[in-house]
Length: 230
Image 1: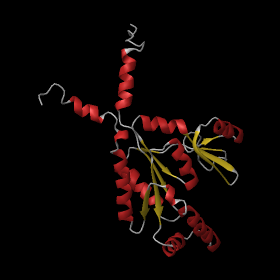
Image 2: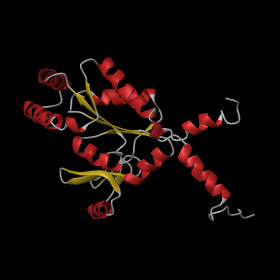
Image 3: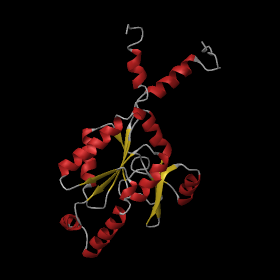
Image 4: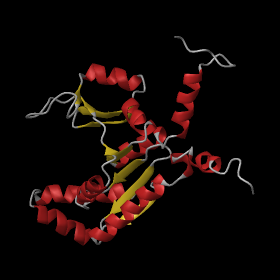
């Protein structure tokens, strides 16, 4: 049996769907940037462990698969021509060229996750974060600082993976990245891991409580007062 149109030509079911879509919780886009060696990955792992609602989008790349990487699981592997065509159509939330290969985050899947109430976490560089802001201006943009140059150098050396030359490049890159910190909404210094995590967690939870993330909450509560005597 077909739906009967309501005034305005829309079906009742369609109206209910739009009402539900406008009232459901909107997901949070949390973007975290930091110089290499600052402890960003550790903080991300803790946040995802404590808040399983976070999703990671699958990126596109023009590089060849490595090892056991699978298309549609680890990356979407594209030709350079395919990537550039998608870029021209505005299909990427952010993109970059790294060592001759292109990488990009598809925009539509991120918006789909956010619209259905899921949260999306980006562990990304400064350039990507600034592009994301154009697509997701209401996201939470966090810059993570090392406590000092000496401490960052100590942490990099402790990893035992870089030569002195590579370490010098990372330190120089850290300076350039930190110079972009004023473009971020929140600053956290990873002097103490537990304290830094508490601050990152607070940023996320504050984002969840903004009116824009829960558009139907006011009406939901007011409706419980309907018909009651003052």
